[in-house]
Length: 527
Image (tube, rainbow, N blue to C red; front, side):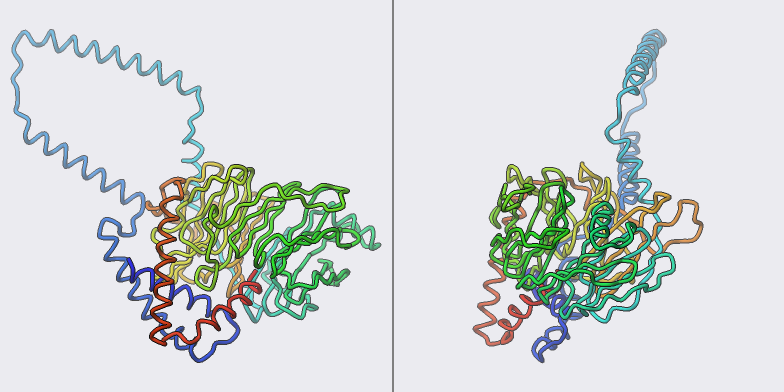
């Protein structure tokens, strides 16, 4: 496993290096070895997995089990001696038939009673069958000249932010660019679309149409800007004194904007006046993810720490910390150029965490209990983002060994694996947003190197979709305790440190310091 971990580390570094604006000669040499390293990793994983761990589909596994049962039955019939019944045995045979009939009647009565009780697996089975038949059409929206770092959606519009410093508005039905919002001088790192009722309040204060919708954007230029969706005009700009790496909107009371910085600071801004209400040094490193849920705010950082805050209206300092869990609990330590950054999606008492590993962490933020959800069939997977749709959890998974990217779907609240959606042309997914059409169909948008719209096709659509829906039996395991996973990651971290020492001693990795400093800037831009 030592060589596998070393290869995984090198490939993670290469994948992150490829997201940089420019490469040093040493970095370019490392990137040039990607194909060679990927081939070697795939070879080792195949050897370790064995034939029984080959990429299997549930249907194939069922056929295999049926064949085993049939073979067992044939084996028994070949070795069971034929017994001739005596004349008096027919009475015993009749008694057995009567008993069997009575048992059937009793069984039918019990089944009739049980039919009135809800079957816990019935809903899951129907949902799984529905997604196994799902068809999607993919459309790429061309216009950005650099990495797409964040996406949002309003009605038939998609809003995207990029490292190229622009925010773009797209009309989904026609796949055309409607607005190009230029004004930031640094890469756009985060977006949010406030609810309609809060947009009406700000529109009234600005003497605009009550139907106006707004977009909030944050950037490495230390500014938060508020734009009108109809005209693309910047109506407000707030200077935060720190590069903005994440933001969220609190849809409670008069409304608040919460921003996170590359230095770990959280700031609260009044929605209507844009006045600063509070600044708190919440984390030791960049705040890579923020989400609000009612009066609660969840923050995560590259320091591996997750904090839960309660917002009090009218207080001098609206944010009050309810809970804090460090990297020793979250398992999200060593978030550097190797593993990537932390993303979260909260639901009730649970926070789903994606930290660049092959599994999704599930933290009970009230108790600190941590579990893991399998999101990849081997340790060569990278989970970049996690998101929720009503009744569904969606996790992205990038395969270091093959370069394939997949969206894995899980049912909520059970967290049971449903299906994997993939396409041969699908690039690495760094951000995700979803909404429903008026007819109830799904529309998603994913960003990274490309901006891609996923549109679900109706069930009676005869042509084949652009996405393959399949099931990987190795993801069927439910939530598991995270102890084993933590030990494995600690072992991997130790192995990585040993490798770094060896490479430094040999003088083969002169650009390590540049990578660390470069990624510190990059992860800020990518969030």
